[in-house]
Image 1 (cartoon, rainbow, N blue to C red):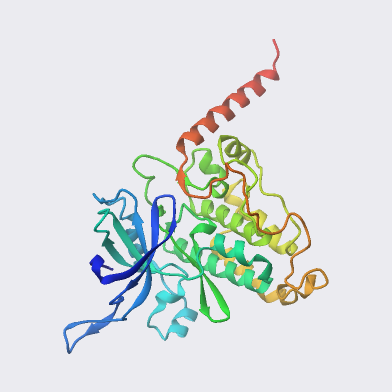
Image 2 (image 1 turned 90 degrees about the vertical axis):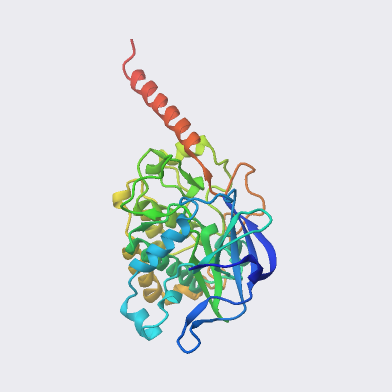
Length: 372
């Protein structure tokens, strides 16, 4: 990774805004480093390439916390070990393209705002949220399972490197055309990630998107790999229904309490029983009963291999060639509940309020059992 002068970028265009940053599309004139030219004693570069610039809000006086994303990615590249299949495909060379994790090139600085900007690979199809909203009824189960395989592969690679994502949702899954007819999913935004052996962040603030946050986190427990698995279960539901989890509810203290009490998105029979049961295992209230990323990768591959008739849509062919049932509960929603917020944000205040409310309800229930 390297520091790149801002004037080495052109055609910088605003693309999107996240919870803690703004995303720009840009052309990097020189492109990333390819290798070292011994004869010329300088680096060979890729040449012009489209990249994403992630401008970190209020980062003009950057500190180690704001550079966490680069630190985590660097640690990931040190610890990730490609399997034998990846090594064979890559001929033991550039395996980074096969880890299903966004590529980080370095950092630059916006001369106008003085904010620092992280340079990453650009994915032309946007994030999974956007992709589902615009393509759901054109997606067959072959593509859905392929996307799911890519997602769990990326999560497994993160977990194998002993890293917890902590902000896992469809807005942080990036989509691009690996080949003209093949869609690939890439896990991005490691900004809130941490080593699985590190303590919580300095101020113990919890960030996230409420529907994707595991109930044990709302109860005050630490993030674990199992917390990421819960989030993955919500992504499975999203791919099955074409909708965001709890799109019809305000994302507030009341929803946090209900999630802790066991509420989950409604089950719609728009997938195989194996798929649905696997999804329900992922969002089990007990984190110890959730499958690991390794187990999920194996199970999702089994769905792919064991049910090809289902994946190609012939199972539901008489209903819909893409395997979607005709139901008012299936398909993207144009207008969510005004209180539904799908950007990462600080949640600690709401979590504390939810804890107090749940505790009060528990005491009242206890005392009601022993009337005076």
